[in-house]
Amino acid sequence: LPLALKPSLKYARSEKGLYSPEIQAIYRKDRQNLRKLYSKYKKADPPPGGSRTITLKEIIQLYETADLINSESEFTVNEARAAFAQCLIYEQDPESLELNDTSVEITFLEFTECLGLSAQYKFPEKESFSLDQKVELFNKRLLRVAL
Image 1 (cartoon, one colour):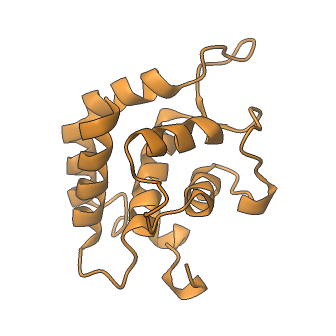
Image 2: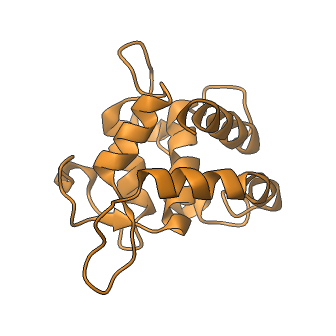
């Protein structure tokens, strides 16, 4: 995406963005199924003393399973990588993340944020959808196929 169309992390993390009442209502409604999805794709081997979390590779597998990333898609692996990098508590440069790197993982809260950011990449601002419509549509496509 051109820089102007990339989701703004500051906006995404605001009460007008992914933390708005409308978006939070979507996540509350989908919470149980998103938790199941998260559990299905999270790493089977947790780090010592740590919890099971999801890696970039697992996010890509999830999106490919849900047919959100494919050869015909406007949503790319690089955009999924950018959303993953943005959702990290310590944001990283997407280019520094290798697909097979298992040292960088996300929690369930970061996972929901990653989905919201991914929805914005999937349906850029040029689309006439509101943010809550983008998140709802992305979650529907994800849950319909991947669960």
